[in-house]
Image 1 (tube, rainbow, N blue to C red):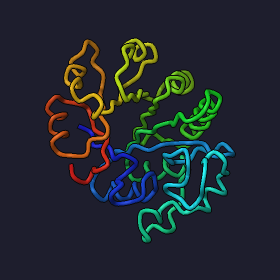
Image 2 (cartoon, rainbow, N blue to C red):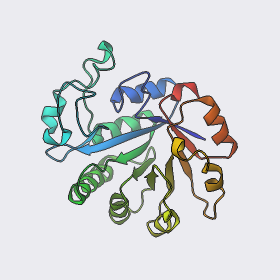
Image 3 (cartoon, helix red, strand yellow):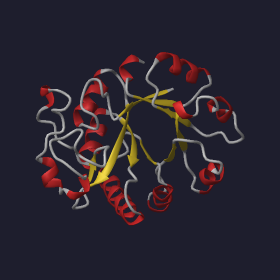
Length: 237
């Protein structure tokens, strides 16, 4: 079973940071789940929230700031003074570091905005992957947005795609087949009672559950042979 650090190792380093990669390596884990958004000047950056307030000293929508402006903000002081110089990384920086450290990536393309924005995001992610991903590590592309999944199939067909769902939709089999998804990522706490039956359904597809943060849930999922967990606590497994 894959142990995938949710935004890194968030108990050891700031989320979605380059330091989180080194933290994962320190605890001998080699899978990370990260989030990508576009800056005002359409550069893919690694950040989870739509707004910058929680993790930086800037305010408001990330989309309103250029990369140069984002690079001037602090992205680690919220965690501790030790990370006071942490910066928001670009997708390119993250790809190169993960290849260097042999860390595989679940890359979530965030779907906060319009279809037009989603197409721009996919286009910019595709450019970076084609230029900088040397296939020394694995990158699985995932999203809640069906539109993004469709665009990825068209523009980057050789990469694995994973649909993220909070609740398992009735038409999931039809969608998975049509857009040739590699896997499905499921919110565990909203689907606890049906995970086992879902695992034994007519379609055999890799299943990843999020967020699994305790040993008991991990043991239950390992017993029914779930393919992997996304966790805030990779250091305990």
